Amino acid sequence: MSNYKNIESALVHGGIYGDKHTGAVNVPIYQTSTYQQEGLGQNKGWEYSRTGNPTRAALEALIAELEHGEAGFAFASGMAAITAVLSLFKSGDSVIISSNVYGGTFRVLDKIFSNFDIGYSIEDTTDIASLDKKITPQVRAILVESPANPLLTVTDIAAVAGIAKKHGIISIVDNTFMTPYIQRPIELGADIVIHSATKYLGGHSDLIAGLVVVNSGKLAEKLAFIQNATGSVLSPFDSFLLIRGIKTLGVRMDRHVENAEKTAAYLEKHKGVKKVYYPGLPDAQGYHVNKNQARNGGAMISFELHENYDISKFFSSLKLIALAESLGGVESLVCHPASMTHASIPKETRQKVGITDSLIRLSAGIENIGDLIFDIEQAISKSEVQL
Image (cartoon, rainbow, N blue to C red; front, side, top):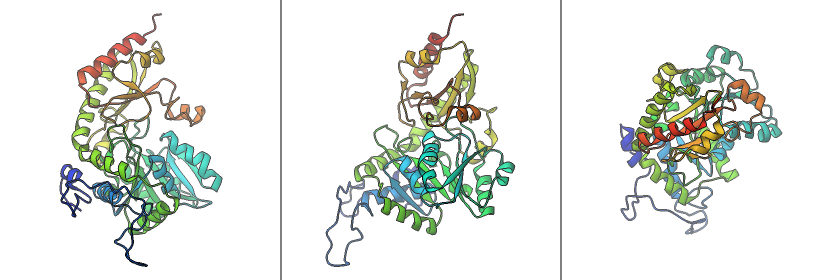
């Protein structure tokens, strides 16, 4: 553990740094499924790579250090990480989720865990007083995203963690949008932090991974058993790629956020834009809460065009920004949540929480800001319907 005071240094030197056997500054890729043992019950700390692998262990130590948690766990995808966390619960338990969360989180609860009699309820986690009253004996956890996907809704993480502790239940925060560089939920009292590391932590749209950090030895023991028993672990090569991606997280996020702030300010003033969702804008929902718990507003923006604009034409007119699933890569990406990332959520539910058919989600990349704004400008202009 590096124990560096500043996260910029921990990103580069944290976790298990280098290789003590050779002096290599990068952790090697231990591309092996098994390990030769010296005798019965005698090994060098490694037995089988589903149970443990040195490259994966270095990544797990790194994310635990960055999130200031007790232990970290690396999985084959963000959904595998969420599935492992939800596997902590048993038949009859229920989980509260935020009113707008990633569609995959909703889907796995609604279509998979419901088969095991693990329930869920969708609540407005920004209303702390109301949330406190929603805790029944069946509720065993509160799972929030802040800012949430895709409306960038901000939840007071410390307040939610306080409610969870009051009722003896678990608080879980999906920190994918912010990363530990911008926000550290465990410092705010959360029990478990989840990342789709496919996104900003990897940062280059070249891997699929999920990470979990827990705040206690008890939770670490339980999750380690689930990880080994269910087996959806991250490969050594992808663990290596993810460590490499994390090393540049600080400089990338600085540029991502700079571009997002300028783009959000531009969109807010555009005549064709009906509404902008970005927690870094002073008049945004949860601006002050976010300012207290995060370094800045992050790099995700959602917005709606006015009714006299054709969003299909907007998407097809983009030249630099790609229409694609995912987010957090160095390239700017745009998507249509209603038909892409959140299509698994019933339309009635989407409409109720504000995920309209006209909503556009933008992941601001690290390109030149002038080029980004020019691309958005010309696409909006081409999408205007002449009445």
